[in-house]
Length: 74
Image (cartoon, rainbow, N blue to C red):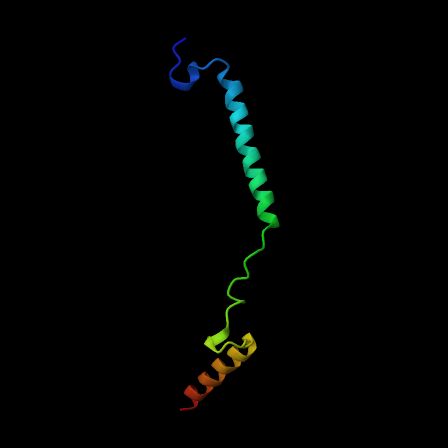
């Protein structure tokens, strides 16, 4: 018996199994609590262009297309 470190502890495998079980339970509980928390909405909740009002994505795309059309007409 030339064990070193933690392996000198009697019933090391039992204690290691218990520690792994506790670690798994913490992960399960944390992930189940994360489901209940409100989710991030990304950038959708930010005001568009600092005007305070919301501008739809289609309007932004149309504006960009109009700009490109004007540049190509030149």
